Length: 329
Image (cartoon, rainbow, N blue to C red):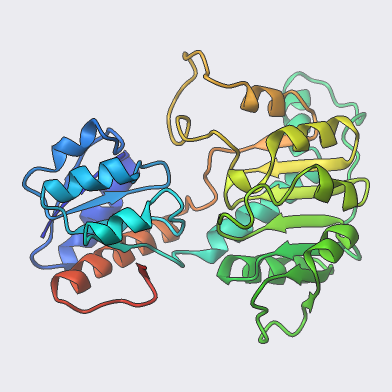
């Protein structure tokens, strides 16, 4: 099997070249460009393509991939909202993902964002570099004894819940399918979680149902001075409503590893570009907001797990052995 990787960065190439040595019959090629209707023609001579969170797997692209003989789409990520699954099914292209590469990586980054924005670490770093040792603007809150509200308690959300419990927080959560093994969590409605939590951390996939689940109405139910963290998908939060909430002093802090309209920015150096939207600039204008580069997954352990699982998926597909937990249907 020959697999063409789109949007391949140096760390992707390093991790996959190391992992593929353990797999017979799999050959990897890489291109820097991301997948789009224009770059889909590059797949000639390949059996499968591998994309990431910003890759374009819309119906026209999938149809073009099918016309080139592609039978397999490999996602080296957990989310698949960028894939037109109806088009893939119609084209008889199988889609596999990496559902649980490293829940610790994402959950630890979520807590890092919460801690940093709570104690204004980003502001303190800049102030001290300028020899400004004043404490004004840096006051935070103790997390111990506060309420952590976890939205989504899959592997990542469950790990975040355990971290919060370790900080001495009371943990409440909302999930359509509660995890009965997490006995320390109090499950309740989304409204009640948003209303009671001092720290809200989002850990759920993006669906049509939860698009903009954080909006003007749900923000209004939150406590004043709440901390909001999102490491899942940017479209779960209505950015305009979030910005208005920040301006209305609803939030003590906001930590975002994802945000709306980030597709053109993900993993790219755009320091000399004129940006298409002002979303990031507006968010970064607030002293109580931290935005990171969709990097929650980015640890050595996670990259190794992503590589292994992706190649396991390819190997199983080639051998006709379905991996039910990884295949998107």
